[in-house]
Image (tube, rainbow, N blue to C red):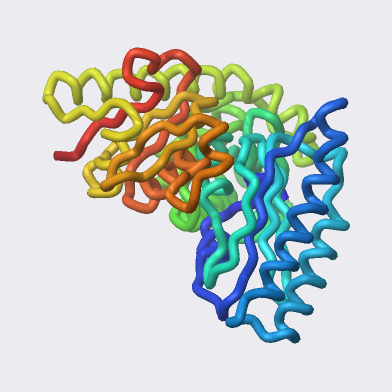
Length: 371
């Protein structure tokens, strides 16, 4: 799966407490040669490590250990090296498994617990900046979801929609000499009300930026009959035929997406400036970590490729060298940035990834505080 498949419903399912043990396996991967040659070897080693830990765990019966090991081996066999990005995440129970290839690196880990390790998935999705786009015309509406790297049609929740075909009314044509305008006809208005209602449901369940694409009269009618379109961050006034391809949608949206990213970056900069002026500002990993854990962070800005390994000492984070990390114990956190992002999102904070070096003066990470 890719990060766009991590819906709110699926994330809730993955975070649910389950009978011990469930297994989470993460590792860095490589998309190109020659580095990618090491990935299958590392994966085999981690699968073997997981099997040994299951056998040695006194809380795990031989039957459960065998079932979990079998599912893990099946998942590992299904990993497609052609889809390798920056990391691999396998989540495994005795009767199911999930495979994720992420555009964000993750440390090499095997975790047995009663919940899955989801921090790497959550951080990767936040970094990908997923959005939705509605393409709409008088007789059809399609919802798309994705990132700047690609979009796909969203199936379910009533989409795609097609308007009921209205039979011609010869008597009306005889009486007034023409056919009703598409965008004043009551059947079309009812269809757009239906589009609005279903769109509001989708956005309430899994909020993300919304873009609209359609001819100007269609977008105007959507505004007139409903409320969902008011949240749109960008619009493209262009016809959207029912057979439009994903590639065409993304091409037409490119200027709006670029403008949306520019506005979002400016908004984050303004929020951080206001926070500094109000002395409600945290900078650097240790300060932001403390603010996030206390629930005080309202907005967290992180550089795109900021990653660091730390040791947790007396509730503070101390950087650890790679050499020291290899021999350190559990107090060392290789994925502390992803953990911080997940915790911040859980606490209701906005998390925004910004360009590398844009926060160099603030330790690569900063936060505007609620109090």
